[in-house]
Image (cartoon, rainbow, N blue to C red; front, top):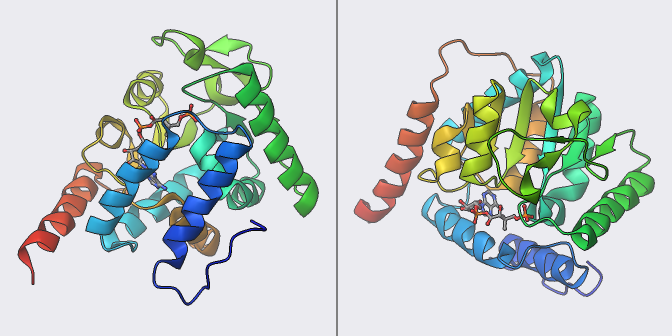
Length: 246
Ligand code: PTJ
């Protein structure tokens, strides 16, 4: 972040900071070609949600935390955007949850995998974190998916019971749900296939979600009445209100 010059008092500071992280990650070879497009779509939805955590997203975040804490084999799946935007806090969360992270990318190339693993190892070293980083040597495939994006590890994604997938694509989310897993989706677009397919969908911006999780880690309990369709409907309602209120 060395050449990031914006002042924290700037009204768009947070947005500029996230863009800067992506620009830097692009230079470092971490990102997919369409990463900026995905981010732009996320920004548009975030604007419509008021760039804040709406109450139903907070509820879903607490439910997700509770599921991760209760899980036998939780795992956090990471792609290029997730590492670029929130690599440090995601690894801190994984340590607090005592779970591994697995690099699992849609546009898989050996170069990107090496760059992403290298970035995570550097964060681990810097903060002296005890987190297992999986994905470098895939030994299994997600059933029902074609091509390199299905590559994963048995000890991570395959054997997990609860998996958190920030900014996931719909196909893979569907394949993970079909495997019987509890799939926690983080996606600002409540209309995306991933958002609709997920077991617990957090309609909120990734960096805010991870901060909220870190802040609430001791205070999460499973709510048996949790209803994911209501979470999605509430997010859409917030967006609709944006258009109808002055
Ligand atoms: O690193 P790879 O190869 O796995 O590729 C990652 C991307 C994100 C490029 C790939 O998965 C992709 O193309 O994703 P999509 O289909 O564009 O979906 C990304 C979703 O994430 C969209 O619905 C966006 O609204 C949402 N999104 C983008 N940025 C954020 C976000 N949701 C939460 N927080 C964000 N910061």
